[in-house]
Image 1 (cartoon, rainbow, N blue to C red):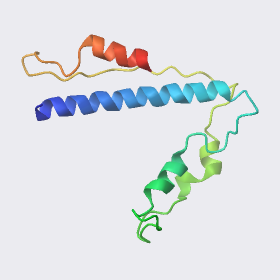
Image 2 (cartoon, rainbow, N blue to C red):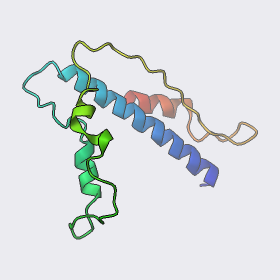
Image 3 (cartoon, helix red, strand yellow):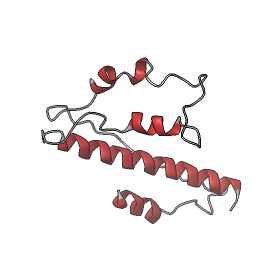
Length: 121
């Protein structure tokens, strides 16, 4: 596989990841009406960050690492942007850029590949 194809595949993977995140976000928004589902830490960002900040043997990260709860990670700030059942629905347009050779041949993904990934979401 050429570097060009690897880059194209990486871009497609990122686009699909964004779509999957959007699907999760929308499904979480729909479930926000159910009061039995805890809404705290619904995105899991802090949990993933905490896991990554551990050393391989499970110890604490270097003191030079960025602070675990900086201003942008403050749950009060973060939670203020979590949509509710009455939040306005936002429509996001998605564009896929499928890389090809300079002459237009050899696409990194076919139209069907993209359609299948969107359907999988």
